[in-house]
Length: 394
Image 1 (cartoon, rainbow, N blue to C red):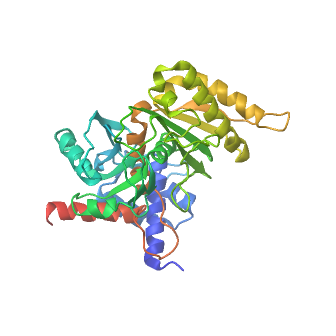
Image 2 (cartoon, rainbow, N blue to C red):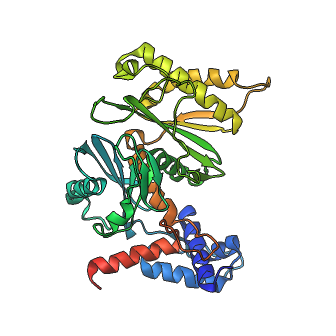
C-alpha cells in the first residue's frame, strides 16, 4: 500500500500532467477532472508555481453566477530545456527542446568512435555543443542508441553497431561526470516517445515505428552492413520494451545463412544498397513480408516510417499494403495508416528528449518499491531541483 507521501507525489504529478496536457486549465477544472479537493489542488499548484515550472496566465471569465474568475495555468517553458542525443558509429545528432516539446536548437556532426568509451563520446559531444546551449537551463539528457538498452537501469546490454557485447553500466559512469539527470534509450523507442509527444492530445493506442538507417561498410565494425532496421512498439499508449528490453530487435525470418546483415540477401548485395535500386526493392519486400504478420497478428493500426528510409515511403507503403492483404484471411481489410515521422533525421534525438519530457509529466507507480532508474513526475522534478542545488553550490 502506498504511503501518504507517495500519494501526495502521485496527486501532484497528476495535477502537473493535467496542466501540461491542457494549457489554460484552472485549479477548479483540475479538481473536477482528478476528483480532488479544491484546497489540495490549490496547495499543489502554489508549490509548482513557487518552483517555477507552472505559471498563472491572465484571469479568465467569471461564470454567469458571478464570483471569482478562474485563473488559467500553463507550463512555464522558460523553466528549462531538455537535450536529446542520437549517437551512431560515425555521427551524432543533438536536439534541445523546451517543455512543450518545441525544438529550440539542433546540431549534427561527425564523431570518431574508435577506441573510445561511450561515456567519453557523450562528454565530447557535450563539449562541442556547450557554447550553443549554455544560455539555456539544462534539466536533463537522454541518449538514443541502437541495440538492447535497459533504460530502467541505464545499461547498454548489447549493441552490434557499437561493438558492445557485454553489459555497459552507462548511467553509473555518467552520474560521476554529468551534473544533470541523464538516461539512455533504444533509438527506435526514442522515436516512439517523439510520436507520443507530437500527438500528446491524440495519442495512438498502438503503433509500430520502423526506423531504418543506411550505414557505410567498415570491416573493423561488427555491425549490419549497408542498412540497419529497428522497431519501436507502442501498446495501450505506452512504449513497450519487453522484460529483457529487446522488443523491436529485428532479424528476418527468411535469413537462414550465416550473415552479419538482418536480411536473407547476401552481404555483398546489402553493402551500399542505397545505390542498388533492384536490391533495395527486394529488401523492402522482405521487410514487408516480415512485419505484415506482426501488424495483422497484433491489430496494429498506426505504422510510422522513420529515419533515412523515409525517402522511400511510397515504395514501402505499396509493398507493405500488398503483404498485409496477403497475410489476412478475411474479405474485409484491416484499418491502418502508414505515415512518415514528423522529425526526419532528427527523429531519434528529438524522441530521446521527449522521453525525458514524457517522464517529467507522467505519474509515478502506486507502490513503494525503489525506483530502478527513471523517475517520474514530481519525483523527477525533485531530482532536477536537487541537481540544480548541487550545481549552484547551495
